[in-house]
Structures are given as structure tokens and as C-alpha cells.
Image (cartoon, rainbow, N blue to C red):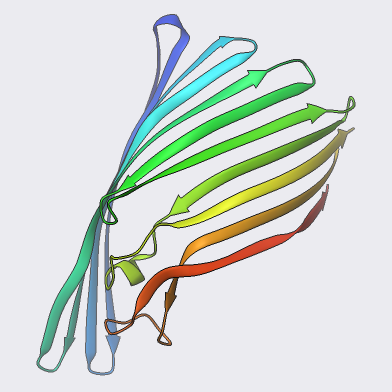
Length: 220
């Protein structure tokens, strides 16, 4: 990773990671060998133009090569998947006053395995109602590919998606913190399958959906 400051107050943060994973599984007479090579690159630029406006934006690249070898008796099969995800993002902080602030952003991801581009807007607004108390309201869309346990058998799917809605109140005074948060999260394109476990003869689809909702209370 590298972080540096250059002309006119711009800050650059960049990093590169590589992962190699090899998993060997033995089940009675079955031998399964998983091999994954993956890399992640990210570059972000940030600038504070003044006390009321800050901007950051950047790009990301994910590369995954996954292979599985299955052996049992005369059966010797290798299968897997390759996927490249290219993403771009931008986020801005706007300070309207000492009591009101807004954060807005957007992210775009293109997955080569699905040949699909997803756009995810996000926003959060915070309002200070007293010297110690603050309300905030947030919304965001997020996308995530199915796990390798599914993609190694089936690639005719879609990225899983979720929409978050969060209302938050926080009170801080003399080292004490109270926070109350109500949330609703809607999920779409969840993976469904018709067998007890994921396998090569399973029928998969992206027709699953669901939600989570509730209230969190925190005191310290």
C-alpha cells in the first residue's frame, strides 16, 4: 500500500493484494482439491476543497481464478470459474452548517462472469439537534457475487443485492454514549437451489429474496 500527498492538496491512496489458497478435502474415497488465485487493486484520490466540501473517488479491480478437482475411483473432473470485477466510485461530503451535513456517493461494478453492470447510489444526512444529540438517516444499495461454492458449478446467475434504510439517533455526554437505530434491509437475487447441499447436479437460480428489520439499542 502507498499513501502520498501531491499538488493542490490532493491525497492518493493505493494498494495491491494477492491471495493464494489451496484446500484439500478427503471424504471416504473422495478427494477434492480447491485452488484459488485472487488479486485486488485499489486507487483512491481525495481532496478537501474547503471547510464545506470534500471529494474522493477512485477505481478497483478484483481478479479471481478458482478451480476444483474431484476424484473418486475412475472419476477425475476439474471445473471452476474466472471472474474480473471492475469498479469505480465517487463520494462527496457537504457541510451546510455546524448542525447539518450530507454525504452522497455512487458505485458502479461490472462483473465479467455475469456480463452485468450494477449501479449503487448511497446517501446519508446528519442533523445535530442539540449540543450532545444527533439524528442521521442513511440509504444505500450494495451488490455481492455468490460464493465460490455456487459459482464453481453455475455462472448463469446475478449479483446478490441489498438496499439498506437506517434511522439513527446518538447522544454523547461526559463519556457516556447512547445510540438507537431502526433499520430495514431488503435482499434480492439471492441464490436458490433444489438440493440439500450445493453440487454439480443442482439447479440454481437468482430468484431468492428476503428482508431484515429491527431496532438496535446501545449504551456505554
